[in-house]
Length: 405
Image (cartoon, rainbow, N blue to C red; front, side, top):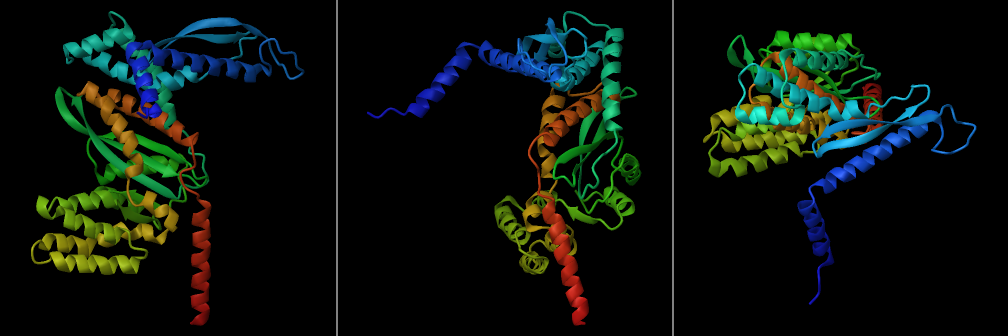
């Protein structure tokens, strides 16, 4: 009988992880220790015991440091140099959102609105007891760091694509539990990388709220926006039209499709979904509008409201067709923010009800910082040279048309 070696390997790995819970923690601990040593080597220009003319300093032992992570508490040794000039941001990056979550739980406990489970979690993470003064001290340092990030200068020369999304969290305000809007703005820069540009907490999703958010982004350096992608919120659309004149508005196709599918019975949703996919996959605006018109005609008798929305609002979902074909899949929806929203939901589910707006903003900002850093140090999201080539071809076509006239 032939043995499936791949299955054996998988089972072996699972067995190791299940039988030895510390296995993963030890791996992470070893990797991070190697990172610290590599950072020190880069800092002084020489490896341990290496003699080189590039050396700018001398090692001076190690300092123990604990790092709480999702795989457990790691015991690390931070390298020291004689001049005391070496520093690492490793701990800030790995602990920032952990501290924000912990502080939110601690605040719940101190304010008397937590459950026994919250008490157990916070004491496991932070020790046996904590006071309001301790929470205030911890929060002050983290809040200053996060506020500086939210107010930082946006350094890219252009942000052609902008994505705006919102979700709601329960927050205790003046003794009442209210839904507060978490507004998040991301952008694709002219260097092809993505970045989280803005995070705010608001009472409502109003035009005034979004205008304030956009004014802040422009003050910090946001410019050269060509396309804004969002859902169909009236106040948001009005603020986009006012602050990004000349930019194109793209209604999120996922939000639009979800609204339409909710208007028909379960038995016919598959039929409508297939029709919408055909419209959204069309190679040109003309073809898409023709398919949308045919789809509306098929639904006019049984579902006149569906037909009306197809005829009156489908064009807002087709703005992406005016941009490079290779970009359309990623600029037709706000799905690029989905991973961040999923992570926010996973963390806020633990807190359930935030004790105040500051606590909510702290946790969301910490997660946004982590996501933005991952984007800026990862792969390029889109090749923005294709956008410039696309615009150049459009200009040439317009010039030829003018000459022919």
